[in-house]
Image (cartoon, rainbow, N blue to C red; front, top):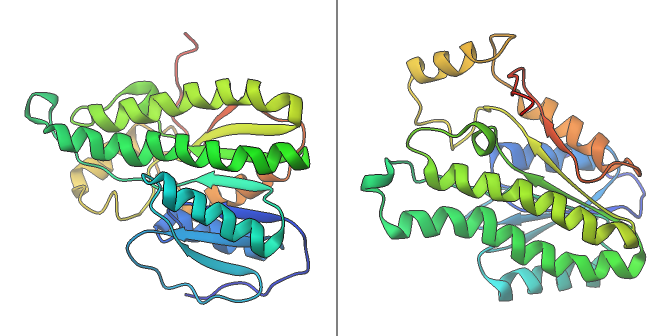
Length: 243
């Protein structure tokens, strides 16, 4: 993996799920824009640590692992300006056939992981009176998806978490937003058939799927804003009803 040359900066970001397709794109774009980045990975990674890049072993479902990661980041750079919860998984099947462990596994990474990480990063951000949390949700959280009740429920819950936490963080200038990145080429979509991908393209007005690099560029732009909080950004060309 090739990473961008480091530019001098004091901005520090932590990305969960950094070894995934979108996670790697986020890490690369942050580095390119001069951020110092802690890249949280779970099972494996191909990051090469340097002055600006710190790979961190991180299990978002473990409070101990999350707290250790935050302490490692703040010990190295003395601050944390941005947290992006990009870690994700799927265990798709119809609800009637879904095992309890499949439900718990998806809720654990997406929702409990967001809770544990947000709870851990908030004190540092509130102390410095500035910070930005960006949660990666999904169109499925708004529209639902057959065979993905666990995933859709977890992603919908992230939207509620976003707006509630934005209210809590506002007095300390901590902004909280969510993105719906659209369908991306990643490990989570590799199992989809050509017919399924074609059907997803047809739900988009532009008749194409999204690109991880474009999503990353938007997220890094959003991360640099100061007056946006409590918002949900859909990043493809599907249109949702207003109601």
